[in-house]
Image (cartoon, rainbow, N blue to C red; front, side, top):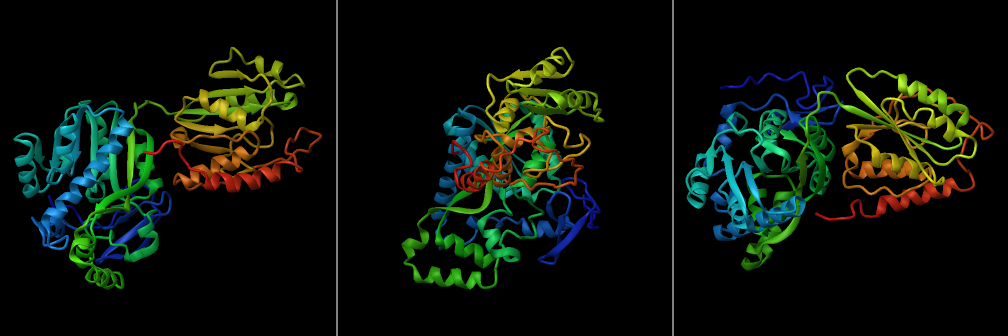
Length: 488
């Protein structure tokens, strides 16, 4: 069916209406959603235009590429597939179960996955690629067609992988929703896609070679996590993508997708190298990102976890907790987690009055170790889809939300913290949380708040002789230390 080529008035990810024109990609307008940051061609190229691109020789290995050595290209594809398989197994924990690859091409990854222990199935739109994959895997292993139109069985697969595929589909949200239904509870999704956060995109700007007519959508680390959250995935881990390439292959890519200045430069370097070096594969961090996630259970209503760290707040904690308990949020259920740090002014007695209150959990610490430690304790108990950190005083209006290190409510999806280790105990926790979420790819949305400051006599706890030094150290420490304890 010929899809209309009229521009969409809505973002294809968040359905926002504030769309900003960026620049043309081979004559096709590229837009950015100012609400969520998603970048996409608008309108999309027609079926006829894409059909002319996806011919039998679309893949570079079907052409005279890689320095004229098709065997070299095949080796690169196999080595890259092995990189992906190793990362998948580290995330899954075992190489077993049913694996679906959407956009499987000629089956390089499926061949390796089957040899490792997976029961494999593939889908691809290219009859030429499907014929090759079938000859390697046997009849019935690979299907030709669009994945979102296939009748995939529900809760059937343990793993689904999409390598350099998601950017090509017309409706990524619909496809990921379709995939979600076909996966077992807790099953794994592995996506490789070009990233607007990559070094090459940052360096080359509008000349980035990934800006192609057939690439309909462009993700960064924030928008890919947003679309996964919307379609029912959690525990997201993102790492820079590495592939095995040769200089000859890179040169062929730049010759086919010509870029001013860069194509002549790569060509000149290639000519200077001996033929064996042009063909030698090497691992390189490329223009994409590897995204691993697990299927989450879909809930009828999302839950908000409200974490309330309190210490020596007897005068205000009762009023505050009453307000939070009575706060109604349309369409959302809430849980309140009060972390009391063994106050010396009777705050604990006030808190214990809510021990039997519906939706309230009380955590009692043996001694005060700082706001950050109390919040981290609360996060361990949180079960909500979203988290808000509510200070134990009355300086902020509970109808306001803010992401700012000092004058703030911090509101975020709980899954944003997946893979992160939070360490700070005092007010430097606010710095740590923001820094690590920024490094993970999230951009804060800042909203003005109502603020009523209190004095030290009224209970303000920031120490101007101590805390500024911890903030400076937090800026350095949390910016430079590894983001994750483990490496995929």
